[in-house]
Length: 135
Image 1: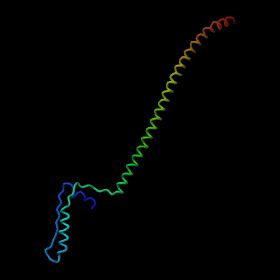
Image 2 (image 1 turned 180 degrees about the vertical axis):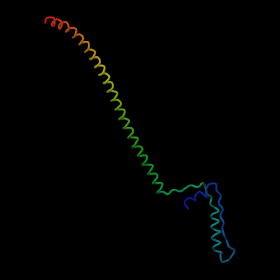
Image 3 (image 1 turned 90 degrees about the vertical axis):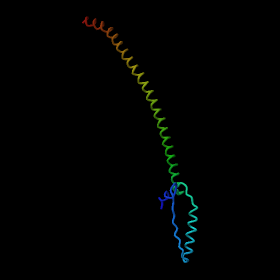
């Protein structure tokens, strides 16, 4: 009985009945029963522990080792992904900085273009005015 290991261990008390016979014909069976009872009486059970089969224990150890290897592999993958992520974040930051610099340059050039157009218009307006006057 596989699950009866806990019944006779730990703090539980065990009682055993031995049947003997006063009949002379049952003398050898009675003697065997009394010898068995004497041997059982000397047994002291400690806390009950379930016995694991060595093959089952080996199987569990292999499973644990496989899980450890899987976890190590996953940790390595996570580390590589984090390194990639940090590298990409650095590239994004660098591109954002370049983009900001280029936007500032565009604004500066647009402002400069407006000034140059205004100056060109001021220089052209008198010439155009004179030209139309001559017509």
